[in-house]
Length: 171
Image 1: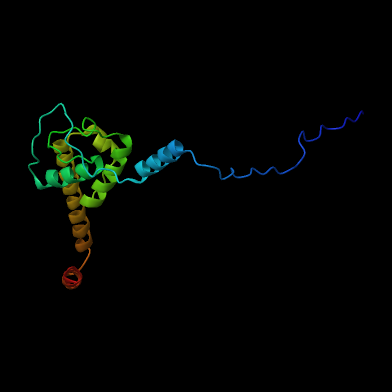
Image 2: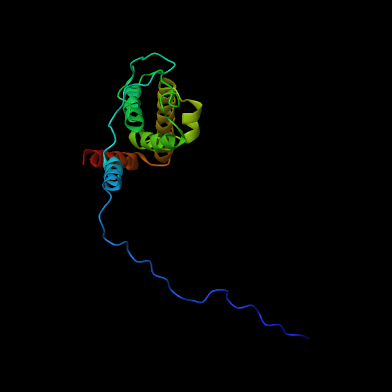
């Protein structure tokens, strides 16, 4: 067997330090440009913009759900006026804003909405109907759970459970 030496590390292990630039006369144009860039980055974004020219004319929200949903869209899209027939993607929405909007809708309406629901129903009025349907399904499910629980209880246990729930609701 023949032994060969392995190659050594190609660079010596030394630390190199970069000295800060000498404090000479500052270039006024560069300093002004840097300050302008910093001011632009730290300036607050405008709270809302005018309504974009969308394919559909403005139709005011009609139901309470549409009004609440229009408020959420207005916050997410930073648009002053959102109509019932507006399409989320036509008025400036995109996938990242859609994720934010779905999270806000879940929180505001206490429902399980998924991103696919917004993609399938991007028009505000149709999404409001979908939300109302999801809320109705959730209420039916809750009623079924309560009825199933009450089915296995005696009359005294039902009365005690009702008193407990009424007391909890009153607090």
